[in-house]
Each structure stands twice: as C-alpha cells, then as structure tokens.
Length: 329
Ligand code: NAP
Image (cartoon, rainbow, N blue to C red):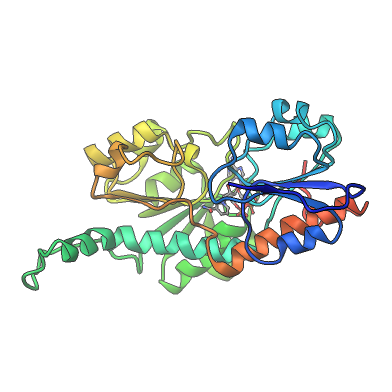
C-alpha cells in the first residue's frame, strides 16, 4: 500500500481510493495533485478519513461509504465522483446539504453488465459450474441421458425487474433467444414493447409468470429486500433468480431457504449481501447457487471508460464546469 502526492501545492487535491485502469490518473494530473491509494485492496476507513481531510475532490468506488462522518472529515470537498452507476453508498442528502457535486458513471457499463447477466442466466440454467466441477473431479465416465439436465433458455419467459438501461439491454439479448419478455417499471417503456414485444406487468405477475427473473433496480430504501420470503415463495419452483444489481435487493437468509427447500430452482449472483460473501456462506454449499465476485462491469474497455468518466467529472467540477454525469436528485 502506498500513498503518493504529485507536486504543485497550489493545485487542488484529488483523493483516488484505488488503483485505476487507463488514462484516468493522467486526466486528473493535468489539473490537480493526485493522491492515490495505490492498492487493489480497500482503503481502511481510518485511512480514508485521514487522507480526505485536505482533499478538494474524491474519486471513489462503491466500497467507500460517503456519509456525514466522511463529509465532516473533509471540509474542502467540492465533488465526489463514484466509479459506478449505482450510488447507494453515497448519502445524497448530506452531499447536497454541503453543496458537494455527486457524479456516477451511467451508460458506459450498460452492455458489459448485460453480457454478464446473460452469462449468469445461461450458466445457472445449463448447470455450467456443476458440469465444470464434474469434469475436473474426474467423474466424466460416459455420455448419459440423465446427466446434468438443465432448463431451456430459448423460448422461456424472462422477467426484467427494473427496465432501465441494463434491464433493456438484457431484454434485447433475450430476444435473440426467442424469449418472452415481461418487465416492471415505474413508467411504461413503449420502445421496448414495440422493439421486443415486451409487456409491462405488476411485480406479483412478474414473480408468478417468469422462468427467469433478472434484477436491474437500484438499491433504495423502497427496493431493499424486495425479494423476501414472500416474494420468493410466489416464484415458480422451476424459476431462476439472476442478480447483477445489488445484493441487498434479496434477503439472503430467505434465498438460502428458497434454494434448499425448492421454492425456486436456482440463483446466479454477481452481487451478494454481505459483500464480499464469506467463503463460509451456506449459499456456497448449494449446487443450484452460482456466485461470482461483483464483476458485472469487469471488462478492460468498460472499466477503463468508467475510470475516465469519473476522472472527467472531477476535472469538470474543479475547472468550474458542470459535470458530465451528475447524479440526478
Ligand atoms: P437505470 O437505467 O437507472 O435503471 C434502473 C431502473 O429501475 C429504472 O428504469 C428505474 O425506473 C427502475 N426502478 C427504480 N425503482 C423501481 C421500483 N421500485 N420498481 C420498478 N422499477 C424501478 O440504471 P442502470 O444503469 O440500468 O443500472 C441499474 C442498477 O444496476 C444500478 O443501480 C446498479 O446498482 C446496478 N449495477 C450493477 C453492476 C454490477 O457490476 N453488477 C454494474 C452496473 C450497474 P425510473 O426510471 O422510474 O427511476
């Protein structure tokens, strides 16, 4: 772990809480001194509070909680640029009360995250992790009519919970698989209905009629534990849940029971609660649960674009311009 400052004390100071790909640091260094937590591990909270004390800007990740405590430790802060589209780690009211600009990285990660959601859907339906383990364990002795039978993805019904940017991108992929598409949204999406024949339904109907449900809602007080025991019980016993949104949308204890007792057929999770998921989690003992470590946006090109966009937002605010992608409030 290393913290380094570039010279030129008259320039504003940007605290960057992790190593970043691409040109992001170079963009920042054109206008500011840059202090980087030069590590792939999380910045300890105490260190973060100490290092942000003289910062004019903070470029952070979803692992950093930006709350009243942090803002109290950062009297000079003018902008917080979250390198993520989700911003449930930011206390927007506290930021607004201080007049601090908050930005996120919408759009640049949409297609990459949709790719991962679809990869998880295919993998859990066709039992890829189980099959891979089976081969590695030397148990593949013959072709067998009953070996590792899964569920067809083509022709099935996909429920998109939260038809925003990523939800719509997943729906477009599903169209190529001849899937019927249901979606929830607070306002109808006529273009999805025209383009994909998608149909808006109430949450209850989505639960009852989907063979696969893919979550694409933001985490808010309203959506936290949307998938509680009651919701999971309303799903089909043959249905699968795919979560690439945020872990706490799902009640983990209820999901564990649902998977053990066969309320649903399986789950594929890019995000968990807690996160990281400890290796001792009971979910990891279940063959019908696939977990990957929050890699939705993890392609070289997309992480590079996210870092650059976050840096461009910081530069804009430090130069007195409006940021490219402010968080709406
Ligand atoms: P988005 O375009 O804002 O889509 C979210 C959608 O959810 C919007 O259409 C929103 O509707 C809808 N929504 C919000 N509350 C709802 C509710 N109570 N009922 C029904 N619909 C509701 O955001 P996005 O870019 O698609 O990203 C979605 C989420 O994915 C992010 O918030 C983030 O947490 C997560 N994400 C995860 C990864 C990963 O690495 N796994 C990567 C990117 C994003 P309105 O338009 O009415 O608000």
